[in-house]
Image (cartoon, rainbow, N blue to C red; front, side, top):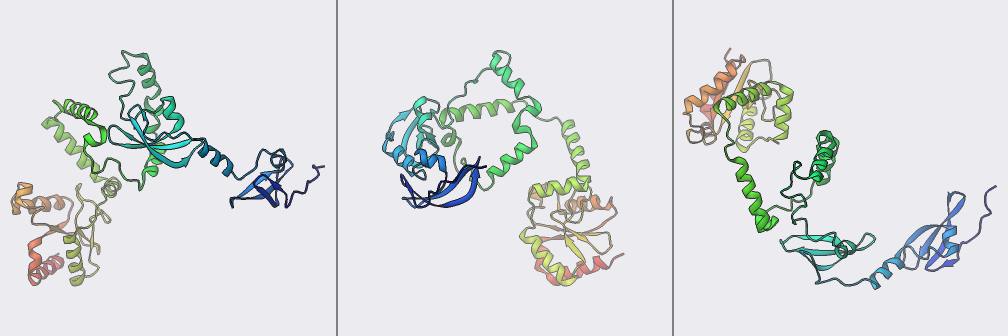
Length: 342
């Protein structure tokens, strides 16, 4: 048999007044719903009420911590100067602090007093200038973090990190390296980057190999679509304008293919692809984007390069230039002639 129920309805225990039995049981003990004088509600075990261990919804402890709180405003702890109380609690008072490097950070009282946190994170790490050859601690750490043992390299962890950062503003945005890292650290990073690039140039042979490998990868439609999605490609104003014009004169004949929705050919994404069985492509060239100043090729060379690329795959190609949109009548005739061509 269970324990006999003790009726507590309406009774007061500290700041709590018992309202009703919740119907819940914890190892046979009744759980009562109580209302606190501060207006809060709390479910409490009968034993905690009778022993006096629970006397409020938690407001008593919060008030007590505020009364006993030692004001740290203006005090310095390492590179941190305490600015104000954030009014947040995680078992301890959390303070807003300003670091000497200019950044702000939130730190618990215990971490400040113990010396566990002395900066926003800009202080030099313990392993600076140490290598796994010269220090056994670094060697052990490198061994522990090798390959799949490194959490940051696991796909599921990387996915979690990505989700956690979604929508969060980048703290480095609109800040110079000196403002974000501090003068000394910024100099170190810049020097390290300069040293890392000295002599690191691809040979012509390596460049050709990379280009060849890239073209081969783009032949795979799934890989090409994945890359296009990763680049967040969208039709530009010129492509949207031309697409509207195209749908007016020959509706449902060509589909815009900026995101590789239809296909990729020869490692390229054709702009507009015929979707009614004809092997025909229309390319929309911007005057500046495909001009001689940017590409180093003449107008004829630029057109021929694209035509040759798609001819190898068995497709006829029509090149339309941005300035041709100024003469709609002439452009309409050009497109209709190309579409009727066998």
